[in-house]
Length: 152
Length: 139
Image (cartoon, rainbow over all chains, first blue to last red; front, side, top):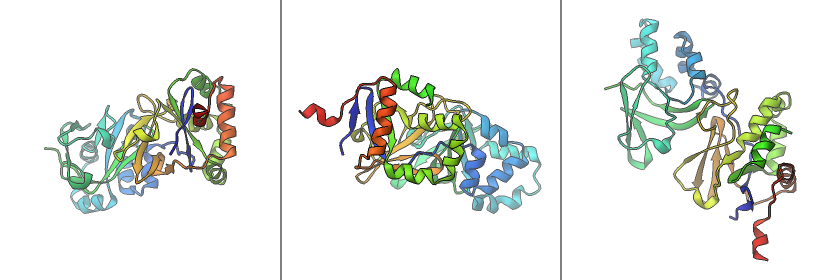
């Protein structure tokens, strides 16, 4: 496939107009991460998630939330906020291209997440598997994971 | 149109433009995003900036390992990523694919349509760029 060159660089003709990534709240809604959205709202974290620059969010699916719902049901908002914070990294946009086997990321609640690469390029964050990687958001990236992460 | 973009283009060396094809424009014109863009000049500029990559990225440089390439979109109203919002560039089989917001994908197409050429010409000429088609070097 030939590149179209001009003196300033290269042109690629693409078959769709690109969509500018939206904020975390709208993206989570579109990706059906409604439990995450609800938890962030209940703990007053929504503005932080939407507006912090260079953010990485490991977002548990609704199923993941449902499976721990009982243990979190009577937990105080502060504690829930801390749990959510274990899923947020600030200051590094963790696209899959920079996540290598053994990469550690410090979360906003303190504690580290450790990245492990499994077979066929599967990415694990602690014991949670990334099921949808690299969902771009206005201020960083979201990886959807299949369960809560627990920091070591 | 979009003076900041024209300034950016006229000063740019080593950029990559992702130019929507005729079909892409038609699809877009019928979308809800088009309505939003029509009423919001800031959003229009952001969309245009998002289609210009910082750096020269040829098809051969894109592999089956995703790369995240910064665009010219740095307006904090729409993007809050240091270095500019990114697109994901990856080869899937023989196709070069760019992923943007909400995992929407745009594939590099073979067909170079008249409408997209017109837009490219308009953008580039008004930005003062000289350009030639790849075929020129083979005269």
